[in-house]
Image (cartoon, rainbow, N blue to C red; front, side, top):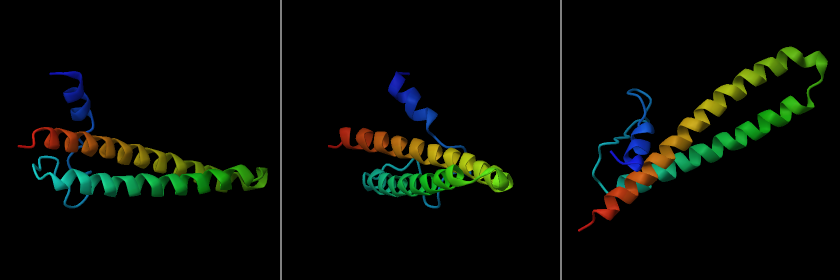
Length: 104
């Protein structure tokens, strides 16, 4: 197995974590373009939310430590979700190149 195949396999999400309608086994050439757009928007959205949350943490003072802790937990969850979205985005971009490379 070459390294690009191993890398693509790494980004295959565990069963149950894919979005509705997402089918990594799809051979339709339009699917990668669709999912790249979907995951691009999800990455952009979570990045905006993370930026706002980090700004809120930065302006909190010591009296708001309970709020800061909650925000930090939410930020960690968003960072994990954003990383997942980014990995799926890379996977679909690779899948698109793979499908179009085999175009007859």
